[in-house]
Image (tube, rainbow, N blue to C red; front, top):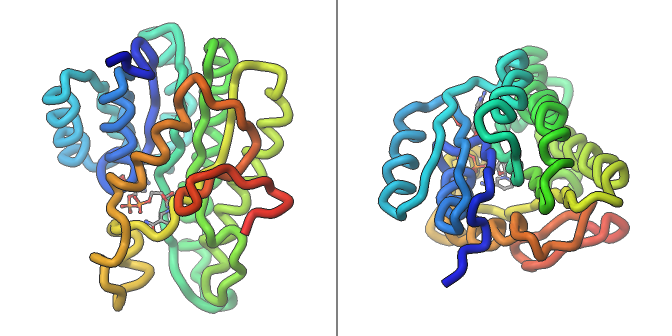
Length: 246
Ligand code: NDP
C-alpha cells in the first residue's frame, strides 16, 4: 500500500507522551521521517523504538521549549541536515493552572504563555521558510475547545490557545497562495496526563485514547488537504470555519 508521507520530513513537539507521541508514530507509519521534540528522553526513546519496529525512522531532539534560542536553531539545523521540512505539528502544551483570574501566580502565567504561545510562534518563525518551500507543506497547531468555551477558571489556558488560533489564521492568510496549508486542531477531551490534571475526578476510560485521536489528526498532514486557516474538530471529524467555531 502506498504510504501518504513517503520521503517527507515532519517535526512534532510534545512527542514524548500523549497525543504528540501518537501523532509522531502515525506520521512515521505513513513514511515520514519524524523529528521528535520534548524534554523527557525516556519517552522519546520509547517512541524511537516503536517507530523503528514499524520500519520507520526518527531523530530525537531533547529540548525544553522555554529555550527560545534552541527553537530558533531548529530551522537552520533541519535545513542543513535534510534541506527541507514538509510537516510541522506544534503539539506541546501546558495546562498551567485552573484558578480564578486574580489568583493565578505570575510565574505560572508566564511559563504557560511561554510554552504554549511564545514557543509556538518561535517554531512557526523558524520553520516557515522551509514549509513555504515544500510542495505540500502542512502545519498543524494544537488548540483546544477552551479557546472558545469561556469557562470559569480556564482563563490562562484558554488565552494561550486563542492566541495560537490567531497566529494560525493570519499565517494562513499570508500563505494562501502557496501549497502550504496551516490549521489549528481541537482534539477534544483525550485520555492523557494533561486531561487527568485538569479533571482528576473523571473516569479516564470514558475518554478516547491518544491513539484514536491521533488517527484523525495524522491525515491533516497529507498532500490532499486543501483547507487552510481553519479549526479541525476531532470529535466532529471535520474542519470548522472560524465564523462558527463552537
Ligand atoms: P500531555 O501533558 O500528555 O503531553 C504534553 C507534551 O508536551 C509532552 O510530550 C511534554 O513533553 C510536552 N511539553 C510540555 N512542556 C514542555 C516543555 N517545556 N518543553 C518541551 N516539551 C514540553 O498533553 P496532551 O497529549 O494531553 O496534549 C497535547 C496537546 O493537546 C496540548 O497542546 C494540549 O493543550 C492539547 N489538548 C489536549 C486535550 C486533552 O484532553 N488531552 C484537550 C484539548 C487540547 P516533556 O514533558 O517530555 O517535555
